[in-house]
Image 1 (cartoon, rainbow, N blue to C red):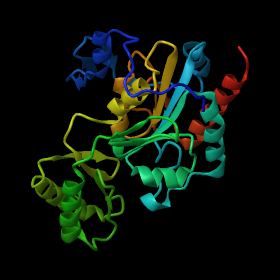
Image 2 (image 1 turned 90 degrees about the horizontal axis):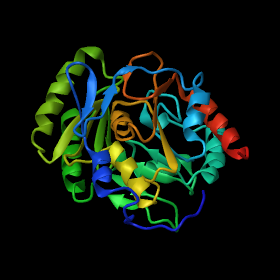
Image 3 (image 1 turned 180 degrees about the horizontal axis):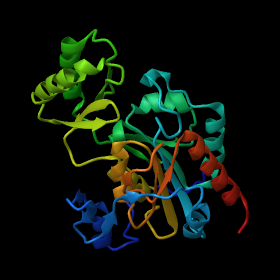
Length: 309
């Protein structure tokens, strides 16, 4: 990873008004268009393949530097039955190790706990943003550290205890306490029991107003009810590292509903790549079908970045 002087606050390379504009939350309209309060419109569409349009991506990248962001499950690894079964392949780890020195930042932004990501990936030069960006830390010598979820760990612990008391032993259910957020994976809960499970989770979640309930792919999550998400985490990382100027192109790879926050945040300043087996409306610019195609795009990026202009 390239070494650059680090700082917590970056003087306004962009006007303050523009920097604030980039953080505005987008709200969905009934017509299927994402509208930013600043007036930017993002159409929900079936994004084209990032592989067939790779030359187009390179046109946007050159001569800028790449800032690479990846979700973990379903993006760097295939979707698996249980979260503890997700294993980063040696080939994918090697790709990340080769990509990182070619970029000013390569980061993992995931719903998993940060410590879990660090253990599963094991590459010290990356920035890790766990719990959907509520817990961020970077490699030694770089000031990239933020615990947006600090102060909510007690509420998360109480909610986890309540959920374990209610559902402990339910076949197919996995409950993860990730310190700053928690998750219920119900992919293997018998279908006739799912509706009742969701209703009981709603009732329990109502007892913790400081936490917000979110839904993903066969998962229900409780996280701090504060204005923070993957998109804000990505923008914070870029600004903290002094990478929020026009000379950097952020590219974000993700497959889950929570990755839409990052696609929104990077609209107009970066590229979003959505991983999905089937075409579906997305705010991302491009689509890939699976983690194997993600690996192929990483290889092409490495080859392009290693080639002198």
